[in-house]
Amino acid sequence: MATKVIVGLGNPGSQYARTPHNVGFEAIDALANRHHCALRRSFRFRARIGKGSIAGHNVLLVKPVAFMNNSGPVVAAIMRKTGTAIQDLTVITDDADLPVGQLRIRARGGSGGHKGMQSLLDHLGQEAFPRIRVGIGRNEYQTDLVTYVLTPLAATAWKEMEPIIQSTADAVDFLLEHGADAAMNAFNKRHV
Image 1 (cartoon, rainbow, N blue to C red):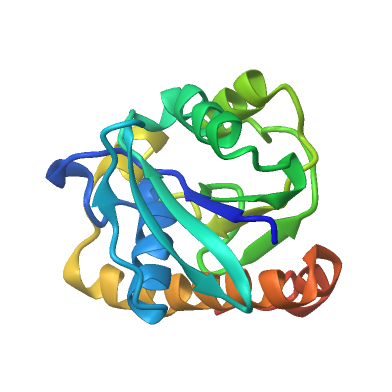
Image 2: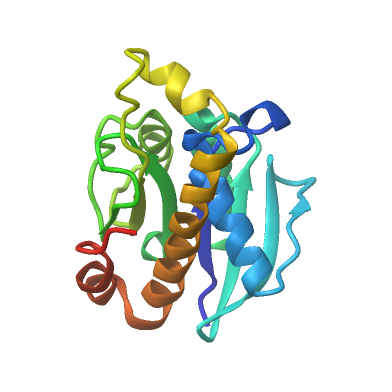
């Protein structure tokens, strides 16, 4: 049975914990907790990796410890070493162009201007893998998007983000069990 590789994009380091840009990392943590899959530092790859099972599939949960915009080489190395086919990769990332709580699942596509996703596309050389974009919105009170996505959320905002992260983990579980088309139908209209 083919191993499914689930990658959450984010930035390493405690200063980036609970930032809007790190929802991919947070979703991987939620999946690891839900499926009793310990994430450990890999000495072979620049990543924290957990092995487990979801919906009857062997999975690798991956949090690259390279900065988000340099995630591509890490993910490409894992894919090569494990012999994982491109369609068995799923990537979770933030999307400031979606309202907070909106999920957008696609079976393939471009970067949408997301530099972390562009790094993956550049190093994988293909775009035919499912991705889950998590809406983080744009902070109306700041003009600087970079500051917004890299600043930890206040406690009240974090409380609002927690169910979104759990819904993202639900989407991964559903996608692995039913496929990308069914997951798109089930989750793309949903707003947490």
